[in-house]
Image (tube, rainbow, N blue to C red; front, side):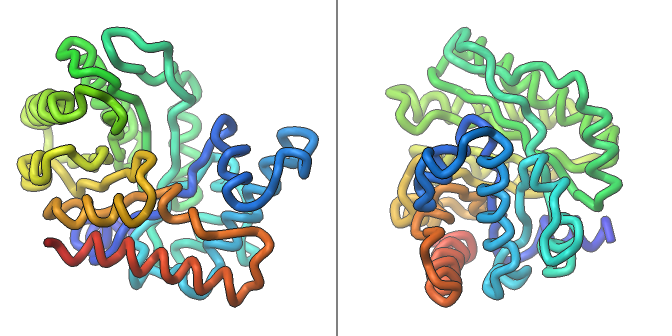
Length: 296
């Protein structure tokens, strides 16, 4: 099973869906889905509503392993049910590889970057995830400025967490996101690429990681990462671009596939009939799949 999932993630045609909005971004995600803040009165109700949205996506007939290689889950979603079974198993049964978001949010900005907050419970979470059939993890930090010292610190932390994930028997998606609104975006892309290459070259053993990166300002900037023998796959976040723009830019970067969240969900509404919902989701999946597979 693990080998099958590794092969699918490394060589499959398709993209990874990001269904991992956390507590802070959930109200915004619900609002985009057509559910206003007055529809829930506490966190439990809010998380219940977002879980319903995710289950509706996961169980849609258009959400299958034919075009969706994997899905990144929020911890509560991983622990929930879909199709009367644990969510990771429901995904596996559809040919979709399950991942889990493990970071606990961001520290305050220092040296132009925001590191991840400490994760003291990580080993226990990894063990639980592995027991549920989860294949890998995703951990996000943010680069706001082209500050070499800050970016080096972000890469160091990402690879340290990645090693902990690998020891736990899962495959990490390292996500040092470059803020697409940064005035220093292009330079930050290049510094980040060079720091990641150094960290990849310094890895011991024969283990591999995945990378989730902002689409670079200059197409092709991350080719060396795509080609690196230590990288299982490079996936791209939409970073706030609307889907047409995100897909157009992604299609210009060979070897990078999508791992979109907002750009995947932007046309979905709670008020839609199942037929309307499945059509809108299917259209989004087709567009993102094309940008991941058919390169300019």
